[in-house]
Length: 157
Image (cartoon, rainbow, N blue to C red; front, side, top):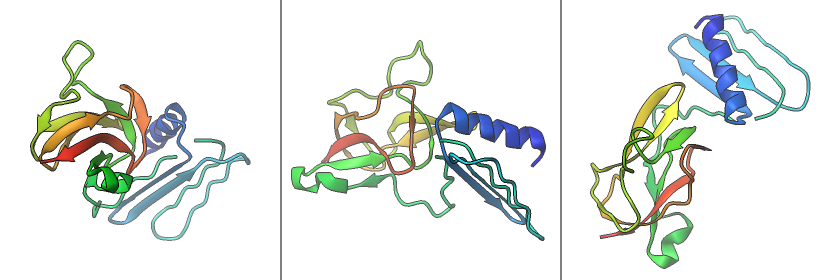
């Protein structure tokens, strides 16, 4: 990873008001944190570890991420959540001119694409991962989302 990539990550953190970012690959690890204090950069023998300070929250989940669907606090209502499997920007449609992937009341199947999340300029299709009917969309289009944040509420079928 070069300095240009690190600057792009920092810009992404600022744009999405994120305070933490961590990435680990084979023999390389980078960790960026923003807080109210000054800047601090640390380096360890072996894989480099960078720490920055000043405001915003990015965390890159490990490769063993939990399912994007969970019952959450909606168990009493019989609803499940389709949760964000990553941090990024939520989009309901593939482009500004296109129709939304799904609307409230739409029936979805496990392979149905329900939205995309842009993370580091990569568009990631998010699938329903279960069968049901969409009953609510608690996230506004083109807004930042956190890992595990509910994107849709679904009544399982």
